[in-house]
Image (cartoon, rainbow, N blue to C red; front, side):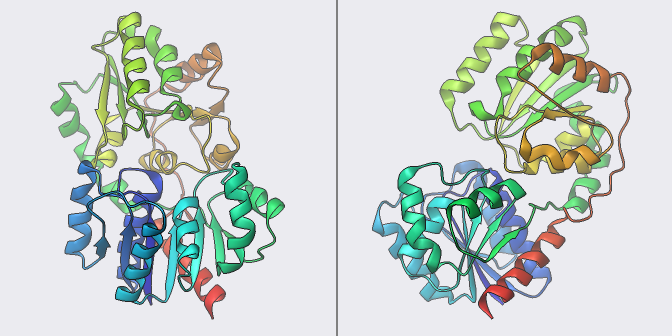
Length: 358
């Protein structure tokens, strides 16, 4: 089968990372994939695209940010060039432009929890839903919220998967990564991975962990992720300055070595205000890390796993108590993540596509 993925911007974010993983998984299954964007690649992501192209996965990315109907025209050109059997349009905006351009066999993929809060987008979806072959959502709540507003029947919940083998293979790199940062084996490393924006809650983590970092001179906090809001990043840096922990908190920016960082760390933090599921959380589960995350709906699936605490992370005392509790031992957890492997996700996408199209 020929599969085309439509995205907004090639960058280190959940939807784009999922797409790059799906294309490789589908290639192993004998399918041919292409990816189309309507905004230029962010510099840090170019390495991923080069790796994709070396695996015969086509990426069609413009040199400038396309606007208005130029986006639909770009998608139409990409479809006529590649002639896919199915098109997966990731997130609300690409899904809208794909259907406005009357692309064939479009399946929308909803990556947020509540995708249609906007009145304008909701009104558009009332019409565009009938031009979809199906709708994939990554969490039960996202599907519920969509079905409450729209009548389209072909809905399917497919959780985001990750390359679990890739995470496991990174374990031997723990010492190498620690040495690269100048950390000893006894250093306590906390990590948070995700876009630098307010809904990810990095400010809660810094304020909560500050006394821990100050009381334990052999502890550090790594914050990795795409810088989506530079003013928020400046605010975070100011908090570290006020708390006197500038040299204990490390802002790493977008990284292509997250598996290595996870194995180098000891505790994973994820105090997000909103998430549909959270690929970073699944990666931390695969790495066996103790995890303290917010008790939002999108993270409830993680309750079944050992070594995971979901709490109200906006309550600093409660958040700090949970961190202290889970860091009292140096345990790593061997978790069964059946259903969250990218191979499982790739199969589920193909089965749903065949159901919708044929």
